[in-house]
Image (cartoon, rainbow, N blue to C red; front, side):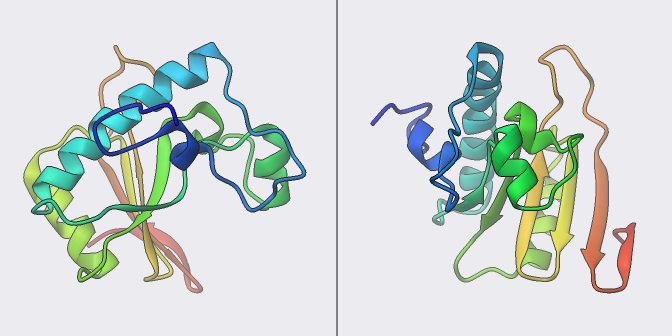
Amino acid sequence: MSQLSKHFSLAELTHTDHREFDNTPNEAELENLKRLAQFLEEVKALLGGRPVMVNSAFRSKLVNDAVGSRDTSQHRLGTAVDIRVPELTPDQVVQTIIASGLAYDQIIREFDRWTHISIPNTPEAAPRRQALIIDKSGTRPYA
């Protein structure tokens, strides 16, 4: 198993239930996944070392299409991850990360079930620090 960081592996960040599709990142996507894994280490430390459970990170075009996501999803680039943290609600995770000053690009409380976090698509890009809520009522700013 190829480790991208101390606690996060390539297998974990490319796992998909759609095993019929190849979900192997190219070189650029792999570099992004390495940056994402390092960012997740910061998130893990911020959350007191709690387990950070990855629901979904990198998605090839076929996997992304199969889950009904847009081609513009940062998951396609390897710069986004959906996580759950046992003992914390998605709202607590979002609030902690926003308050921390971590250089996130986007953070989304999704359906009150998981937290989507992304980093800038390129190392030199400035993080947008966009915070949103997505649920059955639609998409709106996190307030």
